[in-house]
Length: 114
Image (spheres, rainbow, N blue to C red):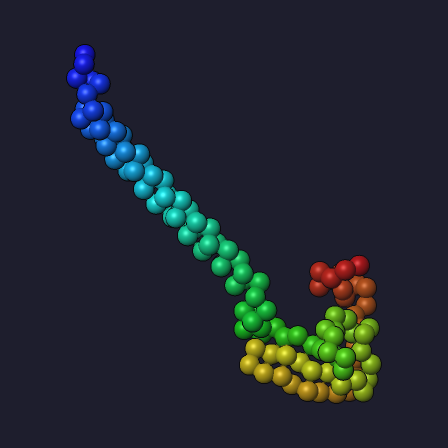
C-alpha cells in the first residue's frame, strides 16, 4: 500500500532498525570488552609468573660477575672472583672463596643438562 512508502512510516522503520542495530552493537561491545578483560587478566598472570622480581620473592637471585654479566655456570667463575648477588630487596657483594662443580651424574639427578 501507499502507506508503506509514506515518509513518516519509512522514518519509523528506520528508527526501529537503528534501535535494533544499536542494541546489538552494545551487546557485541560488552562481550568484546569482557573478553579483552579476561585476556588481559591472563596476560598479567603470565607476566607476574615470569617476572624476575616475583621469582626473586620466592628466594631466587641473580649473580653478576665483575663485568656485570649474569653468571650461569660454576665454570664461568674462579676462586677470588668478585660477584654481585641481586636479591629481591638488595645486593650482596662477595668474593669467591671456593667453588664446586657437579659431576655429570649429579647434574642428571638434579634434572640438569647431560
